[in-house]
Image 1 (cartoon, one colour):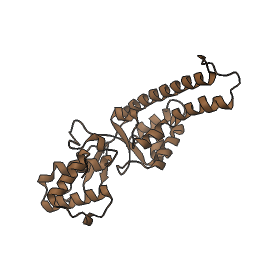
Image 2: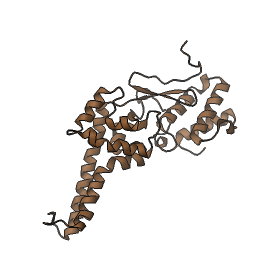
Image 3: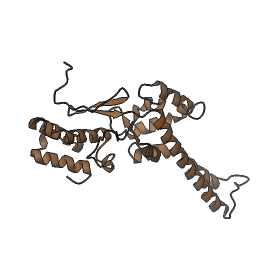
Image 4: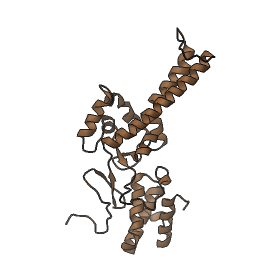
Length: 256
C-alpha cells in the first residue's frame, strides 16, 4: 500500500515535475521549465527592455535638447539626469519585478515561452518574493551574461537560479499542450481568479467527475470552491449539479 486514498486524483508526472499537495487531497503535477525555456524567455524580455530604453532615451533627449540632436550635454545637469537617465534606467532595471507582479508571475517573454513563475506550493508568488528574486539578479549575472545563474540552473534539481532559491520560486510550464491538460479552463482565467495549481485541480475534477463516487466529488468540489473563494467548505451548501456548474463557470471565466 502506498498510503494514498483510492479517490485521490494525481496528474501524470515525471522527475522534472513539481508536485503540489492540495487541500482537496488531489495532487497536481506542474512541469518545471529548464534552462532552454528560461533562456528563450529572457532573450525576448531583454530585447523588449532594450527597445523600451532606447525609445525613451531618444524621445527624452530630443525633448531635453529642444532639437533633432541626440548628443548628451557637455556637462549633464540634474534636469538631464531626471528626464533622460533615471526613467530610462528604471525602465530597464524594474522591467522584470514590475511586470512579474502585475502579470502574476509572467512577463511578455515568459508568456511567449509558455512559462510562469510560481511558489513551491504552485501559487502566485508574493510581492516580497518577486522583489527578493530580482534583487539576486545581480549575483546571478556574475561574472557576465548570467553565467553563474545558468550554472546553478543546470546543477539544481528544479532548474532554479540563485534568486529562485532565495525567494522560494521556480518556473513551470503554463500547460501540457500534448496532454490536453486544462481542456476546460480558459487561459485568461489563470492568473486572475485561479492560479496554476488551482486551475489544474479544477480541470482534473471536471474531467473525472463522472468516475468518482457522488459523495467524494461533492466533498472535493466544496473544498475546492472554498479554497478559491476563501470560505469554509461547510458554508457551501449547493446541490451536486450546482457544484459542477459553478466549477465550469469558474473555469470558463464567467460569473458563478
